Length: 242
Ligand SMILES: O=P(O)(O)OC[C@H]1O[C@](O)(CO)[C@@H](O)[C@@H]1O
Image 1: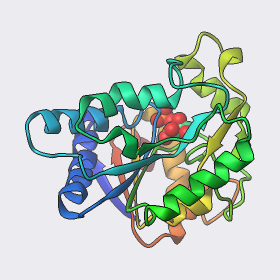
Image 2: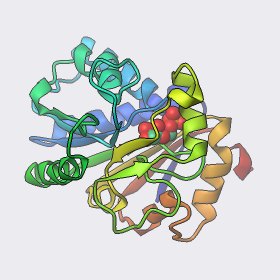
Image 3: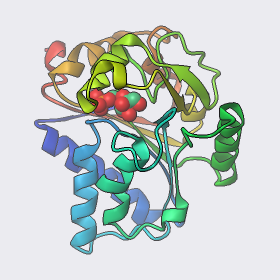
């Protein structure tokens, strides 16, 4: 794993955007895996700014998001569909039919997971997957204990994840109990992975990741097995390493 240290959240976001923009300008039809949460908000702001400045075009880009809450539709302000539309897709020239998220309102969730997995495979797999890091080591919504062989599946969210994400909802009880997420195996099939880790709140998890051997109780530790992972971290996230 390659670790790029940046001073601030803003610098980490700029570095992440440069890596993504390089891929978009070099690859013919890039397939990008996207994440939600607080961490990549700065990255998406940078992508929008670069698009507005004429530095990049997204017309040939296809995207697949990591996850979506079960039960929340596209109009729900806390759905990841809504998040992506507001923070990125509606502000750049991406072809919206080429953007994909799992459908959290699917009647048959199991078949939705299979369809999503096939869509990714049919697109030729993911060239670059963006990841954030959960405080408990989750990637996507793959909570501790998730099999490293898992494909896209439905998960019960950990109490700690629901508590962490309650800041976006009216209350913790309003956070959905389930989500659809790409599995660990789905993520690991990506050709390249960019993990962004920022803020004091992630310092312990980052330290654990860097020192932890592969262990299903700490999902992100699987990344040690991948040959092409870059971690971009800010000083706050690196504070436990000093
Ligand atoms: O960036 P945050 O909000 O700390 O969340 C960390 C990770 O947890 C999730 O919210 C759960 O999928 C991811 O989207 C994110 O990358």
